[in-house]
Length: 544
Image 1 (cartoon, rainbow, N blue to C red):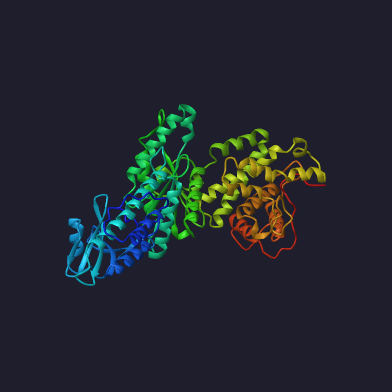
Image 2 (image 1 turned 135 degrees about the vertical axis):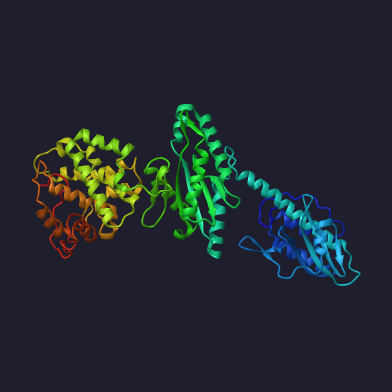
């Protein structure tokens, strides 16, 4: 049974059955139910009324299912406070069992009856034998009316907080519960995880079978999810085809197991004829979050990465980058990065580049591969390394929007023509942003920024340049220098090393340049960090 102590607005209190209370005092107490007040306020007024009637030591208490007495008006972070010393004798328990006022000497207890069940008791001590019982009984009835109104409002609130299609709570309720769990976890040190779940290819249902069929799939998936969550967990519908799952007391590994359990349950739901439901999931734990909104955002970020990697993946958020496991390998560990190739829309964009210019396509693949190797050397996670490989492959996709008479010009470009070429970084981020994550698009946008400033399109400096952009920029320059172009001959590796060395601190950031040295040669100190000579921008036709 709910403890009923939550504040709820706009109540409609039932009529009281109180008999002999003074009209002013009773009106004040009952008026609290119409104000949506807290039980602490009700208790304060009830004590005042009781003391005026000749009672002392007044308390509103409850005996829970485990036999522990609680002060039902004193709450700490939403939890009942146990009473160290229970009422003397068994007078309160008798009042609860018999639903009548009981007394033991001068100690008296009146039941608080809500919906024909005893929710708790009002206990007090009579100052003398002349003090009648009815006043305390009246106080109990008045408090019950407040609780009844609160229960009614709570039921209405639950109805308003429930998604009409799935029967699950919706986002506002989920966020409120998550906020409470964050507060409790911070106070008690309890672990807390959140999982974001998304139905893969859900839009295909509506496209192929219509909205009604899509609704049936969603309702069935929600039913299966509701069946696998445990008593102290919350699952809710957050977006059209996305669900949130609060797992209190559960760490990331336990959350992964729970998601696997949910994935297995929904796998019997047919998405479209011949294809069954799979879930992508993102998991984050409270140790990496500052508040509930931050925790949910990190779970969403992990989910986004999981979906980038394909269907049915589970991604775990971490500050160094999420790790992603595949459906068949979730128990065996994450997939090795070397086996991941460009997928889906990324591969389609690469084919577009290939059709436009086969040499550019080969350049794009080499840049993607070298970017991945540099990221691994810098300690990036496997998931993030795969992500930068894809971004590296697409780094020049914006060149598709540049007129061919400029891109294919064999001689030097005019200043005006070079300004047109420089737009390819921003254009590429916009084009690729349709199929990759925002972080990947930012790497593409920034791969022509320079460590000292003066790059394009945003003129970023040093650490303001995303590390992914720094990596792709160096990989792009290295590949351009070491492969012949129509406007320049290829440099030897030693000549290209000299260019990189001279560009450290100018065009290239030192840490990434050191990673290139470690990747390509045995001695990681070959490239010193004290070079002063900038190197040319080697990603396209030279400017006049």
